[in-house]
Each structure stands twice: as structure tokens, then as C-alpha cells.
Amino acid sequence: MATPCAEEDPLARYRSPLVSRYASAEMGFNFSERKKFGTWRRLWLYLAQAEKSLGLPITDEQIKEMEANLDNIDFKMAAEEEKKLRHDVMAHVHTFAHCCPKAAAIIHLGATSCYVGDNTVIPAQLTTVGKRCCLWIQDLCMDLQNLERARDDLRFRGVKGTTGTQASFLQLFEGDHSKVEELDRLVTAKAGFKRSYMVTGQTYSRKVDIEVLSVLASLGASVHKICTDIRLLANLKEIEEPFEKDQIGSSAMPYKRNPMRSERCCSLARHLMTLVLDPLQTASVQWFERTLDDSANRRVCLAEAFLTADIILSTLQNISEGLVVYPKVIDRRIRQELPFMATENIIMAMVKAGGNRQDCHEKIRVLSQQAAAVVKQEGGDNDFIARVRADPYFSPIHEHLDSLLDPSSFTGRAPQQVAKFLKEEVRPALIPYQSMMGGKIELTL
Image 1 (tube, rainbow, N blue to C red):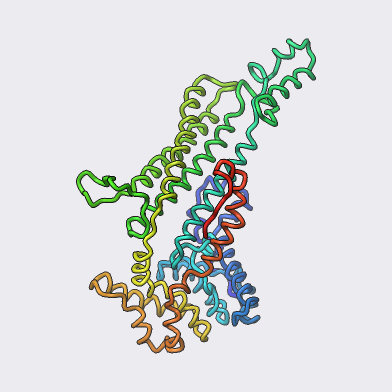
Image 2: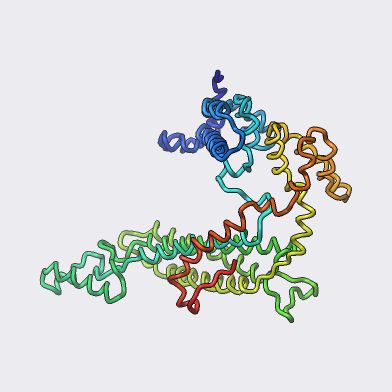
């Protein structure tokens, strides 16, 4: 039988008085601890149901037990577990398992923390270069969609007169409203727009500028993320941006090969992201029809945003066209880190052999920390796998360890995901621009 919840929302006393006072009950619940951790449990249930339907040895009894305890959240126990484990997701895995003893072995099976945090698997495990690049491209595809939307949504101010009332044109046409409307339509069409804003003040709403610069700022964030990844990978010597034959990386250190193009993109992207603050301020402080503090700011921020975005993209194109990958460096790093990467495969193999996921996780946590101490404190080699082989707890999978350590088994469906993504999302997005790209679009897999 389910036990009463220890506390409905243990963090309620820390919430902002403003939020408590003004937020609706529904919105407040959406950001409550009960909603958050209840959603985590439902995601674990969905995962178990899907895994069962695909043939994993998960029973109806385990599923029903999880369903019966979705809202039976012992916040006090979860807080105690988190204090001990220093890991919020595992604390709630253990808490859920406590009230679901039959399902404990399969809760969170095969998942990572971000499965419940944001339903996205981060590269804590091995991934491929192509998959990482596709993550970059996906962000850029979203930016392309946003740019196209902002462009297509853009309207002409039209002929609205001094304060937007069209009074002067109504006088010109001697009170004929239809001619004033037709004048607006004709000029809008001649200017290349499909629509004009039906109502304006002296200016179109400055929220239009916010929309435009928000899209460019979002693009800046994407490029900054891409180039930050490249800089991190360059530091690991796995990937390198173009480096010219006579290029100098540092006046003091002749050997240095700075990823200077990526650094430049990050620098300019930071500037681009801040420019959206200008139209936000302008739109919010306008007095009635407009004062002239509107004009000078817009002349600077709008031009700078487009010019900055342009140079960032041209530099990113230069980086992309000359990007160098070093497979042997990647292979060496994989061999160094593979024992730790194998932990999730070992956990899943043990569960298939009848083990409990949480017990196995704890065993591996202890052994991996011992192995890490050898590497970090003694400068020795990673002996994690040797420790697993020596532990009788893992005897059910000892003969399978070599296959579990095969690097190709860690990339999952990355190659298939890359091929499908390029075919179904990237290529269609580029087709409207193929004439600008010299004709046929070739995406090499």
C-alpha cells in the first residue's frame, strides 16, 4: 500500500513571494517539485513500457507497481538520498525504487540523467564526429527556420501618415477611404511586401525590431556553441580548424596553434547576442508616438546585428570547409576513457543477467572511483576493468566483457541518425537555396 507523502513541496518556503502572490495556481504547479518529480516518474514508466513492448524482460507486475506509485513521492527520503549521493536523479531513482521494490531493477534502465532532466542524451558516452556535427547543424537549421519565419512575417509600414491615422491622405483624396486603402495596398506591393501593418503610430511597433534581432541573437548563440565545441576539441587535439602554412599562433610561443577563427566567432557572437537588448529597451520606453531617442539607437543596433551575423557566418563557413579531424588522436583517447564509458553497458548486461540496476550502479561507482584514484593520484593506467573482472559480483558477465568493450558498440545509432537527419531535414532545408550554392546539393555521408 502506498505510504503518505512526507511533504507536498519541501521547497515551498523558499519560493519568491511575488511568484506565490501573482502566479496562477496552474502555473505555480507547473514549476512545483511535485510536478517535476512526478513527471520524472512518468518518464521512467514510459521508458519501461516501451522497453517491455520491444522485448526486454520487464513484467506486467513491474509496470503496474510503477503506475501505482507515480504520485507517491516521499520528498523527505529523496532529500536525504540526495544529501548522501549528491545526485538529484539517482536520489529519486532510489526513492521510487523504495516504493516499487519489484520494479527497482529496471527503473531508469539504459537512461541518463538528462532523459528526465530535458529528455536529451548528452555525450557522456561515446559519440561520433558526424553525430556531433549534426547537433551543430540542427541548431543552424532551427536558426534558418526562424530567419525564414521572421522574414515571411515582416510587414510593410505602409502609407499611414504622420501619426498613423492617414488623415493627410484622406484629405488628398477628398474623404475617399477606399482610395486611401488602395494607395496603401499599391505602395506595399510595389515595395515587395505582401502585407502592411493595419495600424501604426508614427512608426511601426518596435517589437518588430525585437523579433528580428532575437532571431539573430539566437543564431549568435548557436555559432558560439559550435565554436566553443571546436575550441574544446582542438584543446584535446581531436579536431583542428584551418591553419595556414605560414600562420603564427603566438608571438611568444612559436608552437602554438590557436583556433583563432573559432575564438573570433565566439567574441563576435557575444556582441551579437547583446544587441537584442537595444530594441527591447527602445520598445519599452517609447513615449506615445515616438521620441527621437528611438532613431540613433536603431541605426546602430540594426546595422551592427546584420553585419555581425554576416561576418560570423562567413567565418564559420571558412572553419567548416577546412576543418581537420585526427582519427588516431580520437582512437587513443577512446582507449584511455573506454573503461569508464563501458559502465552503462555493464549495468545493462548485469540487469539482463538478473541483477538489480541500483545495486550494480553502486558497485560500479565504488570501483570506478578506486580506478580514478589510481589514474589521478598515482599517474597509473585505468584498471577499472581489471577490478570488474576480479569482483565475483560481476561473474555473470565476465565472459562478455570483451564484447561490451567494443568501441563500435558505444556509438549506438549515431551513423543511422546522421544519414537520416541529412536526408530528411538538412537536404530539404537547403533545396530553396541550391541556386545560390552553385546548383546540385551534395551531402557526403
